[in-house]
Image (cartoon, rainbow over all chains, first blue to last red; front, side, top):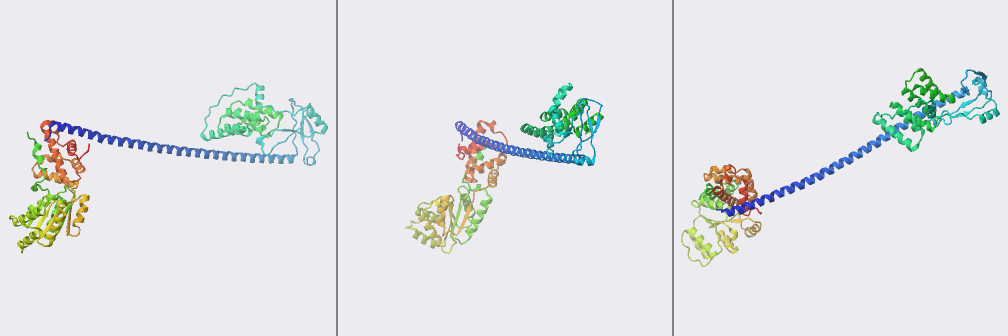
Length: 308
Length: 268
């Protein structure tokens, strides 16, 4: 039979055995936890990387898509413009030349004179009706300098038309410079109705943001008027008229004779309930230049027809 | 000072034949051994790992058949030829043996005396301890057809090889006794306790205890007996000195672990 000492000794041994057993268990538990955590972390990281890759891929695809769309849009616009130019050319050929005499000082006195007979076709088809200013008659012909890419230059580039006599023309040219279209900003300053443009609140969807940011990137890298105009147009269609105005002004700064900058400026002004500004600006442009598009817009604005 | 556990610990002391517990594996081995004893075989090898119950089984067969057949049982090994021959003569003829000059004299005397009688079955336990020379002579005795021998051998890895080399060509029948399974351990303990009418102690043991027993003893019945004895010895101490610690219905595994530690079955 056991005595007390034996039992105490045995209990001590048993306690030691239990501690050993539990240490083994806890070591195994800790090691497995560490391994599992490591595996879990690795898996999570792998997932994250895959997700990022996917997102990047999506973004690239999106960007490519947008670029394609924009490229298409530009091509379409070019096509339309070409068509328009073609039709204009046709009209020009048919009618030979339309000469408008612009009266710089507002006067109701007008005298009709027969157009020159320099070209045979003109003689055959029709006589031109010429509006002539009493005091200072000038003769201009509106010729698009780069019809293929109207966006890159102005429709309103002015060229001197052949007058009745070459010498006279030369003289006039010497005396009177071709009127240069003033930028809208200057016109606005003159009008003294320029208002401070508040920063717009952007409330447009992701697609538009992407398009706009893409166009902005392009503009800042190229400083091309094309992108400024496209931005004005883009902002106009997303109803951010203040930004549309801003970008039309930017475009106008690059090329004051570009009709499109005047066009989007006027349209944005109308939308911002500043119809008078729009009318004044258009009139100022049309006083020195001729643009069918802008005169049509002016008429529409005056009539109160502002629908797009 | 006695305890409730003093009596029950004694039922796990080895060596009592009447206490033999009939397990599935031992029942099968018993059946086969009895059948082989009836066959005209000369040498039979009965082997198994230590503690599987070989000796108990031999004892049971001897007790069951000693009055019906000519059965002799040698539980302890002989290391001297003369001692073996004298013991054999004494057990067969129930008389004091004469002084034999050698093996041949014994064989001729015995053969003459056994003329016309049925053969003698000799159950030899711990046969691996017998000298090889004596084993050879025993084999020659079996050739006379007057003796039939059953060798019981421990089956350890080394001894297994030895046993094979030793008996390979002469053994006619081999019977193996395997270690007990978990189920058999459960049956063994339950039968032991019930056999001694200690029903109240049955509820002490649950499956956890049997699994622990299986784990530390590997189904070795002798080791199980030792562990159970030690367990009840520990419980006896607590019952007398700290009874509050063991008043639960189920036995704490702690005491079984303590018994195993004490017996060196668990290394601390």
